[in-house]
Image (cartoon, rainbow, N blue to C red):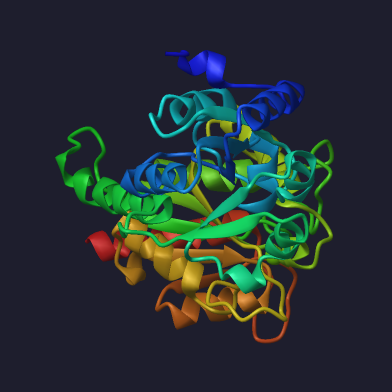
Length: 343
Ligand SMILES: [Mg+2]
């Protein structure tokens, strides 16, 4: 039997393989997907797919295409490993790469007899299925038999991680949680050129004093620029890399970054002044709201804090009902409050 690495073909090698399979009178099935963290649903799907054809070709999404169409932080496993696992399945004959977001160009290139998709896609809604019918192929839908999904697995793993924390003996619980707005509070507003991200004066000292007083620090940031298309997830991640490096060099550690990528036009519960991100941070850190301080430069930060039952600390020049306050002073207020609570 041909080994898994030998079943992984370049597009040009698939061209030849398709010709020889056709010549041998075998009907070709084609499917595609990320196959990032394999589970029973994938195995059942591929076995079922193989039953509807004579030979099965699977195009595994490239790392870049997954970042583009699915999630900038995925895949968990790199392409060569995902392709290897898929190629190791008994139901799979050949594996290749899908660089584009959609399989249309590969379908037109090889014109498989069967284009196979998971049953949760409506055949009529598939742009590809009309193309398949035009050249005389057939779209096959395979209904899922298992409820397993990679997303639900991740959620379960995250939940387990939260519950496992009491066992950790080294990590004493944080005395307080400081949720920091990013733009206008830690760095200059709306600065996304990674080389230009610069900490505002006093930020390092303030965060060091919070940390020394037993605070855990997290960022909570609206990034509607992503929703509006001004910049991508990647710019945001790159921008934060510089920020985290600068803070790290100074000895400040940020436990987590919460961000809302939606624009005003989207309905979401995370965009400040909605309290979604803050409530999630409270859950994740297992801290009561009275020990949580939201530090930010806009009314939205303060309203979100109030809605979550946390204390709000305004940083900036005097504005509306809020007197001028520096981040250093805000940190002092938070530290004093925590000390009073601990008495
Ligand atoms: Mg701000």
